[in-house]
Length: 124
Image 1 (cartoon, rainbow, N blue to C red):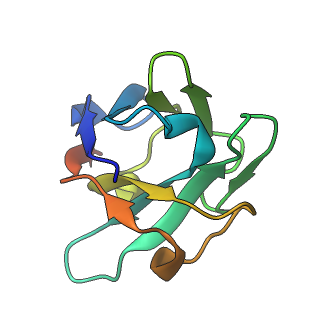
Image 2 (image 1 turned 180 degrees about the vertical axis):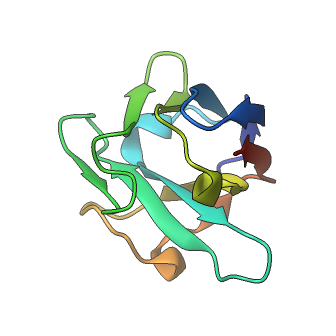
């Protein structure tokens, strides 16, 4: 089992940057595909980014491509989301999630473990 704790959210002006972190428990962190999702008020939780176990491959939602970067440090049991050129529409609660599968996935139901989320608010 994996426990996930996000941090780094906050309030930022449009055009600014924020870095999110997700700390994972467990000695087999490196065996999980990791993902970031977000949920805005009144909307469904949506995919943001995912990263392969080795960190060698990533996939991004079209809405964040070129602005967000996902990375991981398996030695530290950490996954990160660097968010640049933030827009008001990026405002949401951001969640990290762990998928015990092998292939990258953008589907929520393939992720078994979730953090509690961290709020990101982008003002215009």
